[in-house]
Length: 221
Image (cartoon, rainbow, N blue to C red; front, side):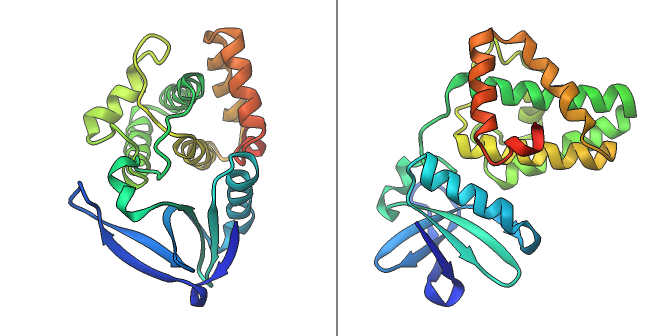
């Protein structure tokens, strides 16, 4: 677990072995790290919270890179093993109840915006969340149709995408940011959380406990 400055590291774009894309790799003392998340200079607390959560609670070897304009979190990866890793660098899907609950919150916010602000705003929300899912390369989200499916599927009765916990953390952070921008306050969070009542009590409790211990937990509390 390191906090590093830009002059401490070397960052190069490396060709993914199975995909037609270049990915940034951070080199530090013969170790290699893959980009997990980027934060603005004003989001230092969020960057440090994610970095500590990954290292202390999830046992991941990771780097917090401090730059004048931004902070970024990088997870250790073997370059030759990239083809076996998922898009967020860990490869292990989160527990199904965590994915289901996150999708229920996504859908609840979409419905709330449509009911209270109208179809036009709901359409803009759909576009904005689609950009987030695309930018952070969420598995199985490759088209506008896939985004629509996420907004209308029943997460409790349909197979959910194999998203990792890092995907969920990013989604929940972005959902809160977007929701606050639409409604002007965080009151929407309490309404959205009511959607979790459809889950089995044990699964709901597991998600809420996980959320409470994660960086976005303070946003949704």
